[in-house]
Length: 183
Image (tube, rainbow, N blue to C red):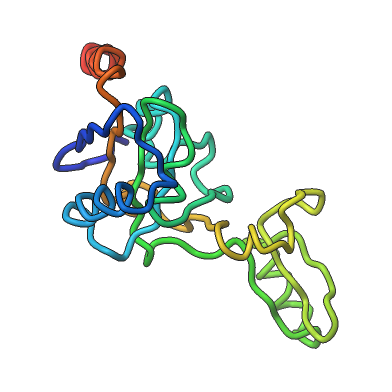
């Protein structure tokens, strides 16, 4: 399967760009929103993952594991230079965790465990997660805020792909794009 996108958007930022510079990051964010709208979650990765993103709609081996996504500014902190920024439709993602009542019938719990295999008692609730039981992010604010998964087709969830680079990265971006185009 190949992701069908109207275009890959190339965004050149300044030599000294920092996602921690709110004003500069916000201006870049506005340009990104023009392409994909406001209702997206973003994931930043190294440009060497672009081929996988274009083939499967996401940069991970299996297409339904937990992925870490957030707003544009946070996603820009990841991936090094140059980077790929994926924009996912928020309606196509689910949180990596749910809470259910401790008295939920066993049959229903077994169905839930198909999607959320880790189940941890927490007072009058059961905390259910897609993360493994030994994951350091399990039941942390980081999981609650950033951990999602794509229950459907990642290609449909992926709204846009951006290549974000600095002027000094132009040649390496060109090389990656030529390599992808020529196979």
